[in-house]
Image (cartoon, rainbow, N blue to C red; front, top):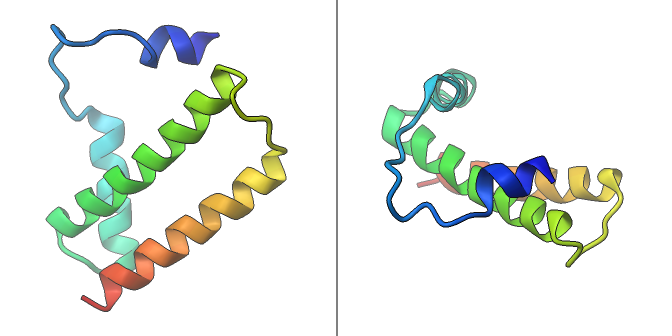
Length: 88
């Protein structure tokens, strides 16, 4: 319910800005993969969008998945995106 309250509402008149946690995560991705900031930001945003989609489906009972399955799926997504980024 808290996820729905925070993220599943009309935000048309709200301004989105990357907060400290987004910046911290991007820096962590940069260091761990040895990539530039724009590539790290894109990778982090793509993973965040995927996680948000799954969370939205769980929050609305559209989807019911075991957390271990979600973890495996996220690992697959991350591994694929990381490989793409490292071979560009």
